[in-house]
Image (cartoon, rainbow, N blue to C red; front, side):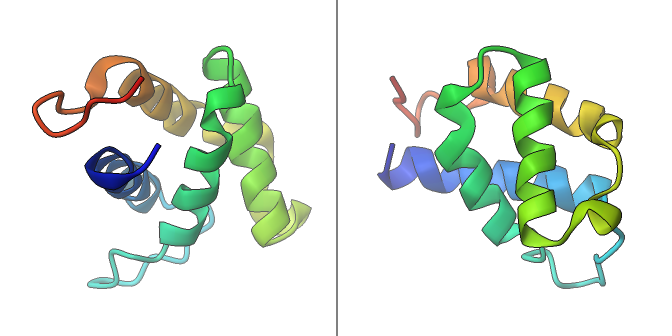
Length: 100
Protein backbone atom coordinates (compact mmCIF):
# COMPACT_ATOMS: atom_id res chain seq x y z
CA UNK A 1 0.00 0.00 0.00
CA UNK A 2 1.33 3.42 -0.90
CA UNK A 3 0.36 6.89 -2.05
CA UNK A 4 -2.83 8.60 -0.91
CA UNK A 5 -4.20 5.41 0.67
CA UNK A 6 -1.21 4.95 2.96
CA UNK A 7 -1.08 8.63 3.88
CA UNK A 8 -4.77 8.70 4.77
CA UNK A 9 -4.57 5.49 6.77
CA UNK A 10 -1.43 6.65 8.60
CA UNK A 11 -3.01 9.98 9.50
CA UNK A 12 -6.19 8.33 10.77
CA UNK A 13 -4.36 5.65 12.79
CA UNK A 14 -2.07 8.29 14.26
CA UNK A 15 -5.12 10.34 15.25
CA UNK A 16 -6.75 7.31 16.90
CA UNK A 17 -3.57 6.79 18.91
CA UNK A 18 -3.30 10.50 19.72
CA UNK A 19 -6.90 10.68 20.94
CA UNK A 20 -6.51 7.56 23.10
CA UNK A 21 -2.95 8.41 24.22
CA UNK A 22 -2.40 4.93 25.68
CA UNK A 23 0.95 5.77 27.27
CA UNK A 24 0.32 9.38 28.23
CA UNK A 25 2.84 11.20 26.01
CA UNK A 26 0.57 13.62 24.17
CA UNK A 27 1.38 17.28 24.63
CA UNK A 28 -0.78 19.69 22.62
CA UNK A 29 -0.25 20.78 19.88
CA UNK A 30 2.10 17.95 18.87
CA UNK A 31 -0.42 15.80 17.00
CA UNK A 32 2.40 13.76 15.43
CA UNK A 33 3.43 12.05 18.68
CA UNK A 34 2.30 8.63 17.43
CA UNK A 35 3.20 8.85 13.72
CA UNK A 36 6.04 6.30 13.95
CA UNK A 37 3.90 3.79 15.80
CA UNK A 38 1.06 4.32 13.30
CA UNK A 39 3.41 3.58 10.40
CA UNK A 40 4.55 0.33 11.99
CA UNK A 41 0.97 -0.69 12.77
CA UNK A 42 -0.01 -0.09 9.14
CA UNK A 43 2.91 -2.20 7.93
CA UNK A 44 1.73 -5.11 10.09
CA UNK A 45 -2.04 -4.66 9.69
CA UNK A 46 -2.40 -6.98 6.66
CA UNK A 47 -1.40 -9.87 8.96
CA UNK A 48 -4.33 -9.24 11.34
CA UNK A 49 -7.35 -11.51 10.96
CA UNK A 50 -9.67 -9.66 13.35
CA UNK A 51 -9.84 -6.95 16.02
CA UNK A 52 -8.19 -9.25 18.58
CA UNK A 53 -5.19 -9.74 16.28
CA UNK A 54 -5.13 -5.98 15.76
CA UNK A 55 -5.08 -5.39 19.52
CA UNK A 56 -2.20 -7.82 19.89
CA UNK A 57 -0.16 -6.21 17.12
CA UNK A 58 -0.81 -2.67 18.41
CA UNK A 59 0.30 -3.76 21.87
CA UNK A 60 3.40 -5.44 20.41
CA UNK A 61 4.30 -2.22 18.58
CA UNK A 62 4.10 -0.25 21.82
CA UNK A 63 6.16 -2.84 23.70
CA UNK A 64 8.79 -2.66 20.95
CA UNK A 65 8.92 1.14 20.86
CA UNK A 66 8.80 1.58 24.64
CA UNK A 67 8.75 -1.46 26.96
CA UNK A 68 6.32 -3.78 28.73
CA UNK A 69 5.86 -1.49 31.69
CA UNK A 70 5.23 1.68 29.69
CA UNK A 71 3.03 -0.10 27.14
CA UNK A 72 0.94 -1.61 29.90
CA UNK A 73 -1.50 -4.50 29.51
CA UNK A 74 -2.83 -5.56 26.13
CA UNK A 75 -6.43 -4.86 27.14
CA UNK A 76 -5.54 -1.15 27.29
CA UNK A 77 -5.55 -1.28 23.48
CA UNK A 78 -8.99 -2.83 22.90
CA UNK A 79 -10.81 0.36 21.91
CA UNK A 80 -7.86 1.51 19.80
CA UNK A 81 -7.76 -1.84 17.99
CA UNK A 82 -11.51 -1.83 17.41
CA UNK A 83 -11.27 1.59 15.78
CA UNK A 84 -8.27 0.64 13.64
CA UNK A 85 -9.93 -2.62 12.57
CA UNK A 86 -13.12 -0.77 11.59
CA UNK A 87 -11.07 1.77 9.66
CA UNK A 88 -9.13 -0.98 7.89
CA UNK A 89 -12.40 -2.66 6.90
CA UNK A 90 -14.41 0.10 5.37
CA UNK A 91 -13.63 3.38 7.06
CA UNK A 92 -11.30 4.86 4.47
CA UNK A 93 -12.46 7.52 2.02
CA UNK A 94 -12.80 5.52 -1.19
CA UNK A 95 -12.71 8.68 -3.31
CA UNK A 96 -9.09 9.12 -2.18
CA UNK A 97 -8.10 5.61 -1.22
CA UNK A 98 -8.41 2.61 -3.48
CA UNK A 99 -6.86 -0.06 -1.29
CA UNK A 100 -6.98 -3.71 -2.16
